[in-house]
Amino acid sequence: MNLRYSTLAIASALCLGLSTQAHAAGGGLLATGGVTTVEGSAGGGIVPWAVMSGYAEEGEWGGTVSLSRASVDDFNLSVTAASFSFDNRFEFSVARQSFDLSTIGGELNQNVIGAKYRLAGDLIFDRLPQISLGVQYKQNNRFGLPEAVGAQRDSDWDAYIAVSRAWLAGPFDRTWLANATVRATRANQTGLLGFGGDESDSYELVAEAAVGVFLHRSLAVGLEYRQKPDNLSFAKEDDWMTAFIAWFPTKSVSVTGAFVDLGDIAGLTSQQGYYLSLQAAF
Amino acid sequence: MNIKALFSAASVFFLLSFSASTSAQSLYQDLGELEGIDQLNERFVINLVEDRRISHHFEQTDLARLHQMLTEQFCELAGGPCVYSGDDMVTSHTGLNITRSDFNALVEALQLAMDDQGIAIGAQNRLLALLAPMHHEVVNR
Ligand code: HEM
Image 1 (cartoon, rainbow over the protein chains, first blue to last red):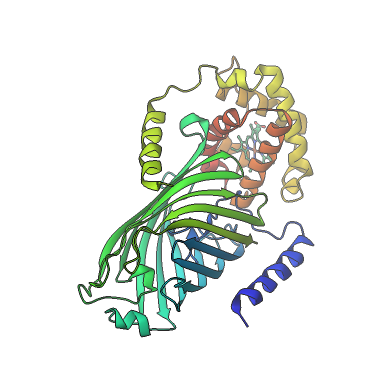
Image 2: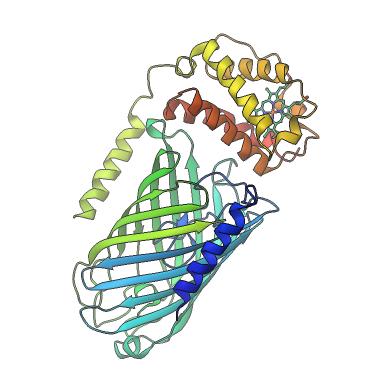
């Protein structure tokens, strides 16, 4: 039985419940909650942004549920995630990742619990850009393979600070968004291969970035980049990149697709493929 | 599919676009000059009073005056030959307890009106960008 279908059931129940009271949804502007990352935090696909999930403004609460899948040459990643946010200030998220090693055989599982706090600023209206502090606690459910390739521990914390800003009328009179994130982490392949390694077992600061443009109000395209540590001697770990398109037909639903380039993973070279994510927000 | 190439192409595009000159046509013209702005604000004011989230704010409002003042204000902001004669934003919104959500609802009402008026997305964005700095003069006053 799985979390994925129960989450879906909850999602549809919530959507039904909410649609009967038209204005129960939070008062945020379309797309300002971003989409759901593979780690469950609001952001893009692979980078957590300073935005709060859903549409909760001051004194309101909101949240999201999502299903995502990345499929590259030799691996598949499935993520089920849910988040809760309130007061345009706090965000809590959970994500369950399962990583299929289609070529090597086997599967890796990880749970991620996240919290994010908006320190200052606003995505659009304040003089300061939106600045948020986040933590993610990650735990492997199966540590056999990570341990065998040199990972030092099966659970760990990541901490990050993210800065996000949108320009309503940027270049070409389009709305642009930029995000920069700095993360302290020891995770191997975001934690799917454990934390720390035989080559390095200390926290490292990595940079992550995203830039996007809204072609119109409900359709954005953009790029993301995520730097990663390289702690394990058995295989080189590469940075990740995506080119995404996100569609927000309404405030309740969004669909994100992307081309992803995950580089070399566990010795299998040049892992490229697609990413698809479905989100319900309330 | 080579994403690295896409990345460099996109960065070049991004840098070039900053140096590209903005459209020659003034925002005032893009909004349809005084007549267009007047029609826009008629739709806008109707949307405001019909929006259940914020209509309560406008129960005591002289809507004809609001329409007139918005038209003067947008016309002047857009570079047209008008002078705004109303109260400043802080004065006219103090005591209304306007929330961030109320502000967003007003933005949506304006976006709907601009859609109905057939205003292109670029001009819509330019008008919104001129109004955005007034957020702190209007919200939580
Ligand atoms: C950038 C956003 C806004 C702009 C440019 C704007 C503009 C104006 C203007 C030009 C006036 C007329 C002032 C006068 O009569 O001298 C006005 C009045 C008013 N505005 Fe706004 N406004 C904004 C946001 C809001 C919001 C978010 C609300 C509430 C949802 C609101 C509610 C009102 C009300 C109720 C009045 C009438 C006040 C009275 O009767 O004295 N405004 N606004």
